[in-house]
Image (cartoon, rainbow, N blue to C red; front, side):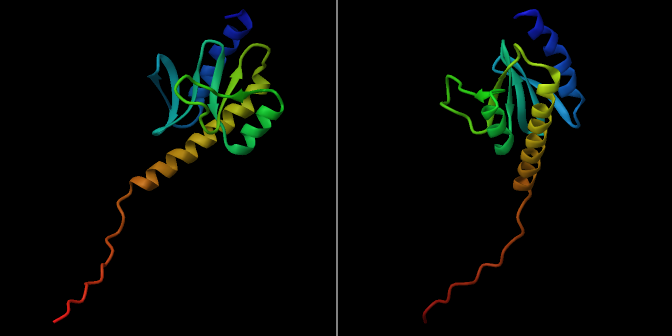
Amino acid sequence: MPSLTRDLVAPLRERLLALPAVVTRKMFGAEAYFVGPAMFAFFTKTAVVLRLPHGSFAEAVGAGLARPFLSAGAAQLNGWAEVALADRTADQLDPLVRAAHASGTHAARSAARRKRPGRARRVPRSRSVR
């Protein structure tokens, strides 16, 4: 990695860990960042990959700050943007990191709602013919 990239990685990791409710886990040999069960960021050798809300994703790709993340296993993962660290500044990355965290927080809340047991529903009895 060029030194500029290395210089960005450590402060970016610190920034990610400073966000509310963030934990890290190893996934696919890389450090991944989660809010609850929802992963919202991980690093590759030369980039940070962020799960962005649609508006932020379109804006970042349109501005040339990111490109859709393409992995060997999936043609395109919805909302995942690969942001190359070379030639980037912390000021450029910070709004994307905050948007990814917000997206992860929303996904974590949605997952928690889905896990709640539903209320028992009254099922009408079928009427038998006598």
